[in-house]
Length: 72
Image (cartoon, rainbow, N blue to C red; front, side, top):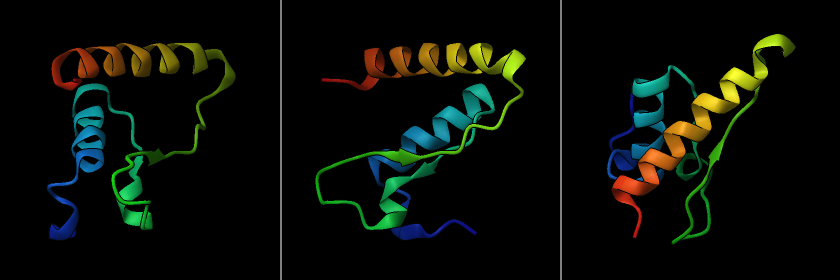
């Protein structure tokens, strides 16, 4: 299950939104005891080479929209 301690972490929110909107899975950095005040995620990229650009485009589109909506 999901650890409630991480539910309110910004990186957890980002990762959950990424999954829901794109189907891409990354792991919140807060699960790895990241430096307080920093936010990141961990990922492994395993798509076939012929779809890698499409995957990166989906990620880029999501990230830009997310930052537009939630960024400072």
